[in-house]
Image (cartoon, rainbow, N blue to C red; front, side, top):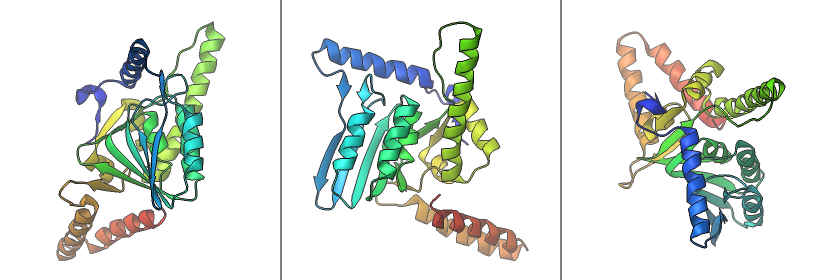
Length: 252
């Protein structure tokens, strides 16, 4: 069962973002670039991009550079390698759009973690594959406001609208109810690869031995249907499987 960050020993979203900022400032001290450009490599008809830093135009991956890199890729398949603590949600939305509007098939590979806004970028892919030990984290938008009561109320209104946009993406991908997604976001929930697959955030799990969890789960479903037929529950089992197939065909 997916757990809030406090129950799995993980840092909060704000802690992750602060860590990324400190890393960026350390790069400056070492004479390196404050912002990291997205790295892309093309081999034949396939291209690979690495999203291995925070997301944001102040430090980390610049969405403008990311969008230009994506648009310039001449490939039929784009592999997006993700290992990111997240960042600025509006920048992530721009990066998601860049992926969605590219004619290539986009596959997001969650190599280590996709936290916060990194999940928004990942949802711009046609398929999401998670490494067996990877993590997926979702939460509500947060921000900083300075001013009077009206300023605070205005910020709260903006955050609520951002939450609605973020939740809509998760609902489209997973087919989960709005109530369920809200519970996950309110709790700042971390999903293991298996949990992300179970709840529809991931399409399959990569394992070094070549095993495919998605295929194994399909076999388990068939066994469950056979068992259900012996107990008079076959109709329910078939309905569950039919819904899963319908969601898969619809791209969820």
